[in-house]
Amino acid sequence: MSEEEKVYKVLELLGIYQEEGSVLVFVEKQESADELMRVLLKYGYPCLSLHGGIDQYDRDSVIMDFKRGNIRLLIATSVAARGLDVTDLLLVINYDCPNHYEDYVHRCGRTGRAGRKGFAYTFLTPDQERSAGDVVRAFKQSGQKPPEELMNMWNAYKMRMEHVCLCLFVCHCMHQLFVGSLFILVWFTVNEGKKVYGSSGFRGKGFMFDEVEAQLNSEKRRLQKAALGLQDSDDEDGDGNVDWDSKIEDMLATKTKIKDVSKSNASESVSETVEVRQVNFLIIYG
Image (cartoon, rainbow, N blue to C red; front, side):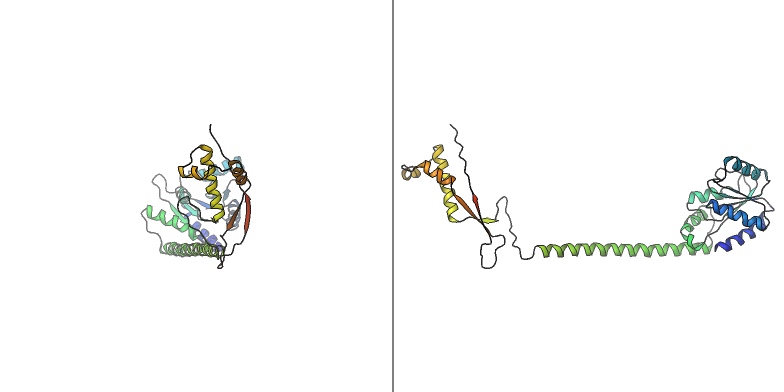
């Protein structure tokens, strides 16, 4: 129902129940309580409002008048009316549907106490269909059958939420697929035209050394063996007249050429030649 229909429905219920007992109307906001009070006063129904905007002295005075029956119609918010206990409270109207199940139970629990009979009405507008589930739950737990119109509203809301969840799931999957495809595309673009070397253990294959460097390494090993007195018999025959000081100076002054073939083309041309001075240290233990 619309907001205008809610006012007329309140007037209809007051015409049925007010003569038999007190009526408590729950609203969501303080402004709504004051506005509804002015409307009902305009239609000739004496009433008061109760909410947090009223000072404590006036709130206590309103509650006392309502309990004594001086005022038989009260418009209140849930917080202000918490703990309110009125003996002959016959009717509770949820003018604004509560947002939580516990709040709904608290409101409706104000009536029908101590074995007395009570009635509770809840107004639902089209934009409050999300709260229909709490009302349906309260009906079922109290052993009553929910109205058909209420069930239709709740089922329509659930179906729409299922469609929304399905759409969100599909969008999420498409997003993940797009990100994965983009990552693969970027990877192939970055690595396009590059030669990737594999590795086995700790052996590297990024650079290649020529024959001169291999000979220098062999000479270095021979110098180390000579310095440590570990020459082989074959080496001693051929190296008796070797000037080891000159050999060491040549080793310290050598230059090593390193060929970078990581970006080699089909003609196996060398893209860059870097000269690095190599310094070899001999550690001799006496």
